Length: 615
Image 1: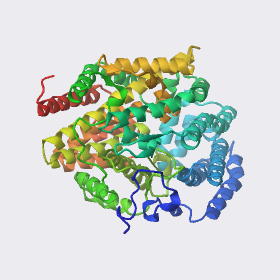
Image 2: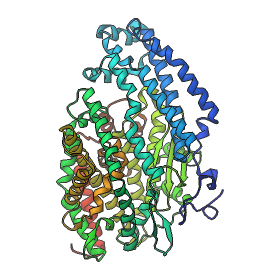
Image 3: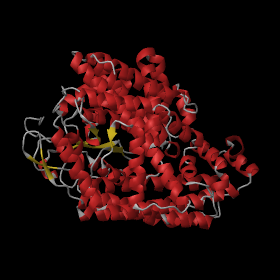
Image 4: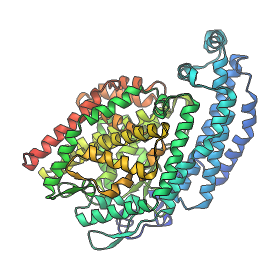
């Protein structure tokens, strides 16, 4: 096997070309389509069958068999379109400047909208079927038809009956989807393909190209000059594009408002939460609970300033460790070993599939020129999961591997145990699976810590992960709530006003010790998740639930593990709050979030004690 001695993907200098990276470190998209020609064949097949699906309009109330045939055809075409779309987009992410796969991605997106449009009559037509007739169709003793795959779908249709529009209106909304994706696509192309950052001088005095993927490495440097240089280079670049970013963000706000209004929701937030049937009070209580615990974060900022010996602490001083990092340049093979050992409490069945995924073309490991930034887990029904990484050898990258494998294993079990119609779990649940892996990983490392310095470093990592996943994401959630509401009421949402709101929230969350540098006012413009409105709060709820689940798994063993595996296998067969209750966590109360904030405070107590300071 080619190892780090042959290929070092996180070495400094220029970002490598994709062709320079050995195949063993690339995901195997050929498992979806061995050739682009086979992709084209499926693309043509879906196009050819769309008229058949459309021809079923007006027939669903005629018989149980007609309804079932339509649902199965819709699902077959949707599942095939998912594979078409996933393949094309992931190929485009290998090199965002490659026009061939940009074209395939665009065509796949258009096809997805066409399929959605062709199927848009289904739900309104089911709603028009009298309850007595529909109940007869779905009763196997009466009709002889097997609708088991669609039980939750019918339940969900009944819940959302008042929000579903006429056939013509639903088709129009579906066809608007292609235009609605423009703000997100513009943001992605601007930040991944067109935006270039200046080089900086690294800790060794070498010139190093700055990218979004490398930014975290430099902003975490023990050398303050490197941190400040990276911070300034990144945000000065975003500042140059502030008007464009503001217009792009404005397009997202308009799109969000359009869909919320079309569905007759009072606010964009209510519309976003309705998809997973999350009560509004869960969102509002999350912000209220965390903001009532901001003194813990202020105390942490004060601790950082004192330990780092700073006269004043700036926004670029928040990511670097309080003690020397003992986990630098972690080889990829070592990262896999660490994560595998950490997740052992999840049991033999889980770990056997986990190991297989690590070595079976699930993961695209290294950054390369033009590759999409960040990390994600994706895939489609009928494919194994895929993970995009930009591995950089840091402990945070090892944590990202654990995180994304959590998503992937959730997908694996959901698709294995649920039919297509009930396999798509909500984001609210997704962030639980990924963060449970992170918590197990950190618990493992704390147990294995070799001394005081390592333990301080890892406790600092826990504080940082909670700061980033609870406090920071709730700050994001507060920003979204304020900005979408401002837009709904016709207020100012220009780039300068967004920057003013963002800077004000930073002052509130980080407290009086923090110098909120002017450049931080541009940070909102680099957050990709804002283009999926009201997504980010689920990181905080997910962390809170995951912290409770990881504790149960390690303390209870088999009973908690069995509950957790049932949760992973449930997919989208129920509402998120219900499924988490099956796993042992009730997110309809503020208790899990309160417990997470208390964990942050207890971790802060311990690290202060280890540092020998009374602060």
